[in-house]
Length: 184
Length: 184
DNA sequence: AAGATACTGTAGCACTCGCTACAATTTATA
DNA sequence: TATAAATTGTAGCGAGTGCTACAGTATCTT
Image 1 (cartoon, each protein chain N blue to C red):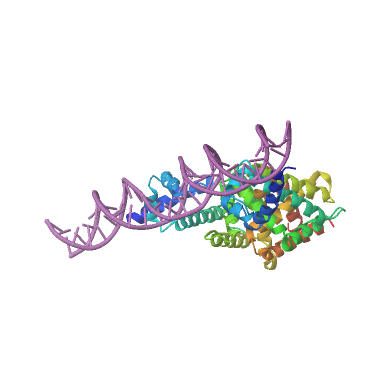
Image 2 (image 1 turned 30 degrees about the vertical axis):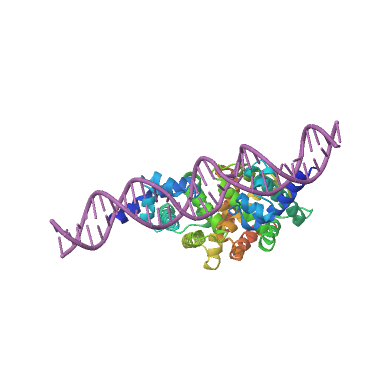
């Protein structure tokens, strides 16, 4: 691996953290260079252009998240209520909340047809639904719809309540009760 | 009302449409001036600064939305399933989808503590939950939580499926069935 | 050792951003 | 009509944007 490639991955890893805690706003090349101990000139040596840099960082974040989610979920299939509560618990107390917030930023840009965000958002959404769908103990016919419903419910809490996710506890509890009664 | 105030309200009305269809990205002063047939210089004569301009436009959009929602909802109380389907129908086929997308943009900025978006988002969220809560035929104890749940579910569909809301139909149908069985 | 290749610093371009100084003109008031 | 006040145009500031031209140095290959 060339020195260039090594530096690339270092930079991606560093910026992943910054993107997670600061979103997509504070991302001028000179600022990102400062954060990684280099110059804007060098960033554009390691990466073709800013879009490629951002895309690479977001891809890294996405992969990291997929790993985290797999660890949290465990092997066995979960009932709908269990899946919901597992997801909510992770969002509430883990770094997963940062991922959701970042996903919100991406989604906001993607909504306007903005590339590369549109592509990235589509990929992430598909991946999440597939992941959630795969772990659900539920009739195949409606499994994907339920997976989307559960994910959307949690995403929606972040939209509504932002940093104060505790406000969403009651709503999630209600939803969990419904799922439990219907599919114990 | 002074000429200044008249022009202010005209501009606000015009820009409301632009914000709804284009979000908060394409909002340079020179661009907004072009859209309203004036100059950046004059925009800063009508408004104290850009933040005040944007806030005024967003407040106008919010008020307009509240009016629309009241019209759509009608007078009588609705069962949870009815409320969900009414909301979803409006989001699917009306201009309400634009409002939701704009709310997503605001929420994305608000998430990072960015003013004035943080304040605006909080107000909008509170208003919506109160509105939905007021129309729900449901025991008072859990009414707000259910209102938040329904709103979050619809918001979440926009986050997940963006412009192609048809993808959310199945999830909403599932949710509606659950609500119907539990609270007919 | 010579030449090719990989890497990096300096400086700046062409552009957009929100905003302002200043002067001119129109409109209202005395 | 004289004076004050409200309204508008011109021109540009200072800071930021992504990106590039060019030259220099380090590292590797023959």
